[in-house]
Amino acid sequence: MFGPATSPSAPLARKVLAAAAHWHVEQQCGSADPAALQAWRDASAEHERAWTLLQRMRGQLGTIPPALAIPALQAAQQRRRAATKVLAMLVAAGGGIALGQASLQSAPWQAWTASLRTAPGQRRQVTLADGGRMEINTDSALGVDYSATQRRIRLHHGEIMITTAPDPRPFLVDTPHGVIRALGTRFGVRCDEGPDGASTVSVFEHAVEVRCAARPDAVQRLDAGQQLRFTAAGADGVQAMPAHQDSWLRGMLVAADWPLRQLVSELARYRRGRLACDAAVARRPVTGTYRLDDIDAVLEGLCASHGLQVTYFTRYWATVSARTA
Image (cartoon, rainbow, N blue to C red; front, side, top):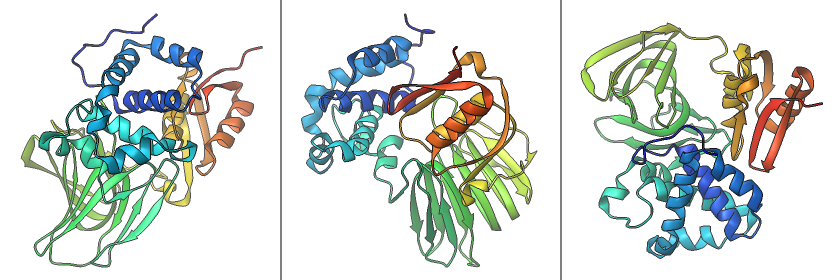
């Protein structure tokens, strides 16, 4: 039985596309559990729509540039994640039927071809050409564009921390939701995708200016200790930056009376595949400090201390729920 109906023309969430692509690759490799695949398809109409779209494009995969298609679709187990990303991006860019100029300019395709990337669970430090520093968090895609007149970072999705260097050129960070201009500062930017996607900027030193994509003339200034969440259409109110906002730089996640759903959602960013929280336990409050280098170990400890269990449909698809007797 499907969950709540979705419009046949509504955009499919990136996580759904990625999950469908994963199942497709597992099936191609002969390692998919048919019952688990069917359970995933039956979980919601959106899942089934993504799966149907993938099946329709199977005969069109020959149009994918060989440099992407051949290594991804013929790879062994260690390359399945690469195949998953290729398929997910192709579906999001238009089903993989034609990779014309419009598709190459789409946000999913730009993310795939981004010059800097991190995998789930990976962090990376980059020294910029002007001597500034950038920390890149898990599952991020971005590009760096320095010219004679400006310094620009294009964050397609994920999270970064920037420490700017003195330079007369303006320093800008683009996301799908708007533009952030640094005013000699250290600041973090997170860009979440999907129907409810938004960008969040957190200022640790000095200040930044934010312009939403649909309102480029409206400038919002943030000073040290402030945070702002914004979409292309507009921004929420400026808030005080939560404590431990940069704990990911130390490989830690600090939760202070969070609902379990929020904690599981954050942990899912650092783990391959899909990690969900059952609605029956979603509101349980959780407080603690968790290491980000072994999410499965975190889940094991969380289950032991809070009466929970993790059900694995496959290695890459799991749900946190109440422990059963």
